[in-house]
Image (tube, rainbow, N blue to C red; front, side, top):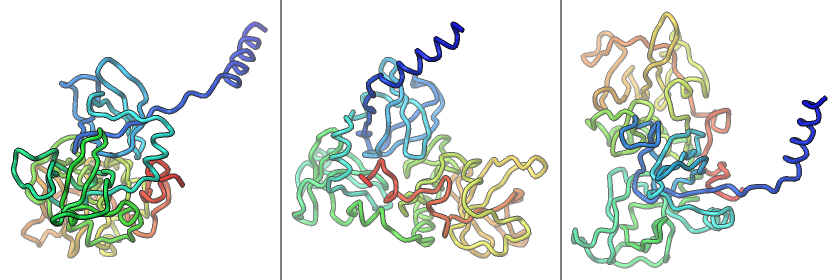
Length: 315
């Protein structure tokens, strides 16, 4: 009886307890490292991009446990986050914003016409989000506001209005061009930015360039979209994902982006091109477990277009 009474009291308390406003944040660096534990020596788990909307789940000293739009959680330094209330985030979602769509790292400057290294305000990478300060361009640059309030100027052809970016149609060539632009970069465990990627990180970077948000890791990536069996790999289209691993258990350990003619781009030691055709000079003898098609399945479980994600826009 005491247990029942306690449960009833707890439910009443939860019912009438005032709602706690969500604590939001925007990363203030071009990339923010996310660690498995709240310490610098902990494993790099993932990365968040500048201006990517994140939720603060927990605080511990100088660290925050944050959740990214793909529901991934890990620890980031509090100093690298600009904390926002619900109302400020709503204003941000309605604001004029720009997404960095240049495939290579760009610099923003304190002056519209300067290219002096002493005038650099920050570096910016593909996928970073900044606010547009003024629509007028000066000397081919546009005025922007970084999440922590710093003002700067960036080349106007390096950025795209966020709504145009978010509403893109599926574009396999854009995805593969993004992967090709990273060719030769060293493998980085936990990397999910153009500064360094692991295998599933490469997939995330390339699909986000097409405004498509996928799960963080290879195994959950392998459970979304349309499943294509090994017997049907000849049906693969450019942009499909190939999954490798233990043929006996079916455990996924690696992912690649299919290009054409049985060739694919992946991050293994470095970002590189290989083939699953034994007659190809770049053949790599890893067993393909299956493939996944994202095209035509956006909006299904685990695949979200940025335009449809309530963290990016007030829907």
